[in-house]
Image 1 (tube, one colour):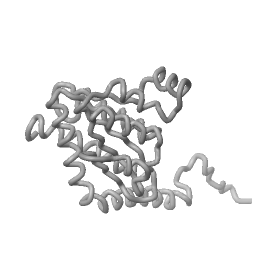
Image 2: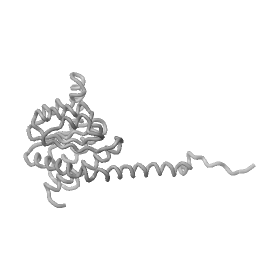
Image 3: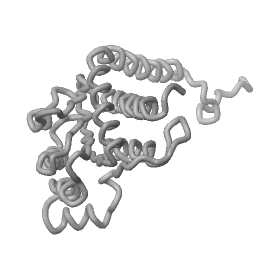
Length: 214
């Protein structure tokens, strides 16, 4: 009888399946890179225009309101944090408000009215002419983001959207000088990854225009 024991796979992470798992991880990287590369030329001018609107608003003592659901809510908070605190260089904080963070406000509006109104009512209360609304959605079909855009138009605000797929209902709600930065493709994960790059591009352009070459 052999004394050789079969290795315990729980104690040995180098199982026979490791190669396929690593390949899957690399595939995710490759798909993300491909999605970003494929939409780069299309989106770069739109990002530049969006940044210009934001810079003009900030220089006019206006603010940026940001909204989104789920992962897009996290992106809204991410963007507001980069502006209110700092991005990659020291500078005074810039006025930006994520409409996704006040749970008392969100739940009271959803409870007393409708979840579709959670951002629109905040926009009507906080928004002023010349402010910017940044609406974030991977599908373009988030009713509360669409209603926020409609409310922003009532307040003479410019709307910028980080959108996805075919643009959905949100695209048809935009007008005038609004900017629709839409990432095509079926994967929510890939769209969100590009949204992250766009957010950093906007932050970089804002800092570049306000602070100069750095």
